[in-house]
Image (cartoon, rainbow, N blue to C red; front, side, top):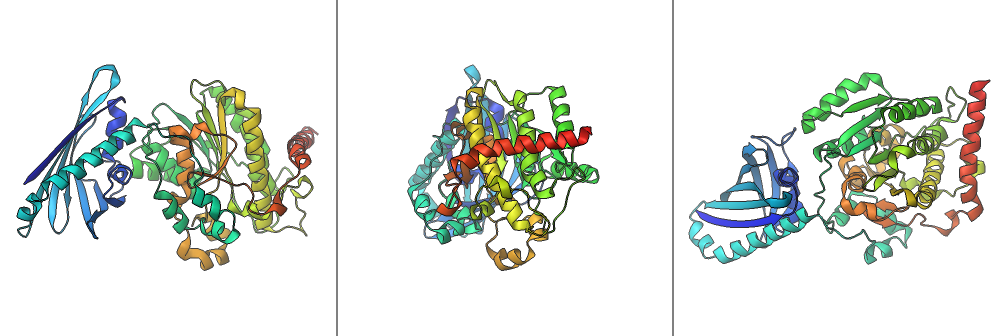
Length: 474
């Protein structure tokens, strides 16, 4: 047996440290030997939970399976990792210190097979150095003092050409970006998140990740028949359920008003509002309120909901956040208020979707400027090309062509989660993000709107809503 020992002290509560370390998927963020990390078993981390790691071993790779053997919250974790050549027992203990700090003791005991221990003993110094580096990086991850997000130079170069910019939308773009992400250890205990469109796709993946970060969720979905199955699935994956589920068809402004009134009456401050609900309608349709359904759901709904919930967002002790989920399709369209609502003979679903998302991105920039004194960070993001139920249903041909490069829902949702959770994400406002980097809102000069069109957007929204309200009254 070859033992290693390291200890660090972190100025963070013991619960937050324990939760982060216990999820061994996070080793990808702090152990430089880890190339990939995933969880093999569903549910929260408990005895029996298994993780799969791929690690560097000189010029080759090793696949290890880790199993949690002991799990005593806020006190002790024991995991055993096995591969063909050796096994390792990691014992991690947590000790509360003065002023809310935490001391972490990390012990690793290696057992080698096939007579390899004699060779390994000659490499003890290298093993100790590797362990020291890993624990030092764990300390940095838990300190959670990342700088404000920036756009890297090579990303700027890729965004200058349409083809290379589009390549960033694929799963390969996600994997490329992930290589330089900073750790995300921020604990969301006590944070209230309102998330729309949570029953599937990006929204469900976001809900899972935020529950794992210990956030308090209010989920908004349309279909009452999905509430029980959604909550059961969330509990199966995370051990937790959403604190509140609200039913609302967000294509109907009357239901947006009712949802807003309910949340305002409850009076619980909102730390994060995520406007994710959406759909691409291939065929022209009008809501029961007389609005074209794409513009109602994708633009008027998030505009009205965010405006109404402003009192629950402003004047927090910490910066509140609004995250608007847009689409890479918006890069094909220019904002024009006169064409936001399409007639039946003009209608094309992908165009209507893209125009609404373009308008929402512009609205994000306007809110960021207007609400800066209210301590609210407002950003938009697009998920790249993700293989969600919406894409499967609405864009089957696109999916058949691109399916080998599509992201999964978790990869598409990552930047939503990062914008909601990471401490550094509230240091910028009014930006569009992809893979945790600010990106340009236009890839072609022909789509840049005029200042007058930007000014007219709010006028158009208010006028449309006023006309709808007048119609309802009469």
